[in-house]
Amino acid sequence: MTSGRERSLQALLATFGGAEFGRALGLGRVQTLADLRATVPMMDLVTHAHRVESHLGFGAVDPRDPRAAELTGLTWERPEVGAVWRSFLPRGVGERPRAVVLQARDFDPNVDRIVPDDLAAIGAEVQRIDHAPDPAALLERLRDAAPGILAVPSAYTITWLERQARAPLDRALPSLRLCVASHDLGHRVRARVRVESAGWIHRSGRLGLPSPRAPARAFTLAVGSQVMELLPHREVDDEGRRVFEERTILPEHAIVGQRYELVVSSPLGCLRLRTDEHVHVVGFDPPTALAPFPRPRVIRLRPPPQPVILEGVTLAGAGLAAALRVAFRPEEPALIAATVGPDPASLAINLTESINARADLLGRGDPFADTELGGAARSGVRTLPLHARRVLVQVEVQGLGRGDLARRLGRAIDDDLRGRSPAYDHLRGRGELQAPRVAIVAPGSFAAAQTRRIAALRGRVGVPEVRIVGLERSSIFPSITHGVRLASDSA
Image 1 (tube, rainbow, N blue to C red):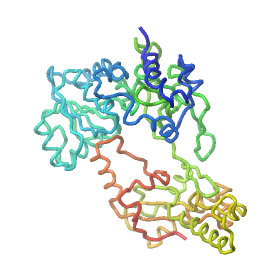
Image 2: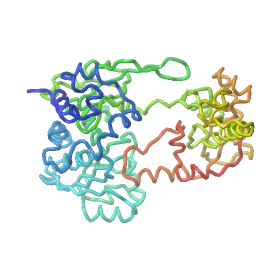
Image 3: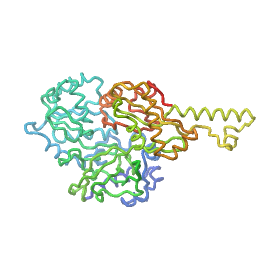
Image 4: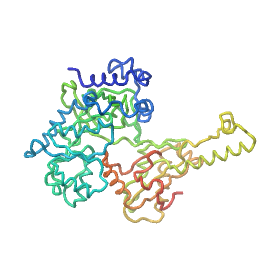
C-alpha cells in the first residue's frame, strides 16, 4: 500500500504542478519528497500568501466535489480518530448519540467539515452551530438539542457556558457524556464529564490525531494525511532568542524532548508552509499502513515571542517580556495582562521629519526632491518612515497604584532595555529612540477580550500574560487599541 505521505505528494503535484506559479516554483521537476525539499523553498506566512495563496482564488479543491475529502487526504486517518473517540465514550451512550459541534466556519469548506464528518463516522447525529451572538440563546439551543457529545474549539468555551448556566455544564445538559476540544486542554472546567482532544485541525487539513495515552494534551502528528516536516530551532543567548536550522527533518527522525516548528505541504493549498505552529516531542506511536514509520507524539507550544523592530535596532521579544515583569515591584498592583510592541504613534515623528525635509528641498528649487535623483535621496533623507521609534506597553493591573505608575514602569523598562541591548542604549543616548510609552488600560479589558475570543468560536482562547505583538496586531485589547485611555505617558 502506498503511504499517505506519498499519496498526498502525488495529489499535491497533480493539483499545482501544471499551474503557472507551480512551474515557477519548480514543481514540474519534482517527483519525490526529496525533490520537493530540494526544489521548493520553505515559506513563512507572508511569503506563502504572496507566492502561493494569491494564485489560488477561492480554494485549491472544489468543496462541491464529492471526492474532495478523499482526494485531499482528509478522510484517510478518520478510522483512527473514530477508534480513539469511541474509547472515550462511556457505556450507555447508544449507537447513534447526538452530537453538537460549536465551531465557526473558519477555513476552506473541506477543512471545516472534518470534525462534523468525524463524528458522523462513529454513528453520531450531528448538528453544527457556527455562531453564538447570545450565550443565553446558545445554551437554550443546546438544551433543546440534548447532545451526548459536545465538540468545542476551546475548553474555555465550556467554562463560558457554565458561567451562563451558573452550574457545571453536565448539570445544565443532563444528556452530556463527552466533550472534545481542539485547544486549551490544560484549562480546568467544572463539569465532571471527560474533556478530551478533538484532534488538531489546520488550514492544511489534519495536523494531529487525538491520543488516548498520557499526557492528556498530547497529539499524534497526522503524518499519514499530508506531507509534514519538522524545522529544528534552539536558544542561542540569554535573551531567549531562537535560531532556526536551515534544513528540516522528517517526522520519524525527531528527537524526544526537542522543539520544532511544523512545515506542511498539502493539496489544499500549502507548499512547504512554515505554519508558526510549534511542538515539543514527548514520544512516538507505532507505524500504521498509512504511515509506515514511527509517528511523533507532541504537545503544542506557543510560538516564541516575536522580536520588535524599532528604528535602527531589533529587540528580542523574550527580553521585552522580562523587562516588563521585573518593572513591577512586589508592593505594587499585580499584572493581569499586557501587550508590548512598536508604538504606531511614533511613526508620525518620522513622517513629520520627512515632510519637513522635502518641503525644505522643494523650497530651494529642487524639482526632483521626491525622486531617487533628488536631494532627499542624496542627503539620506527618507521619504517615508520605516519603523517605530519607541515601544508601546499596554497593561491591565489588579488593584490601585500610585498616580505615576505608568511613568515609573516606563522608566524601569527603559533602564532594563538599555542594560540588555548596547545598540538600544546607544540610540537612546543619541535621542534617535524614545523611552517606552506605557498605557494603563481600563479594568476588565483582558476579560472582555477573552470573552470575545470565546464567543467567536474560533481556535485558541488562552494567551500569554505578556504578549509581544507587531504593528499589524497591536493589542490583545482590540476594542481599545486605537483609543486607549492613558493613565500617564512615560517620559
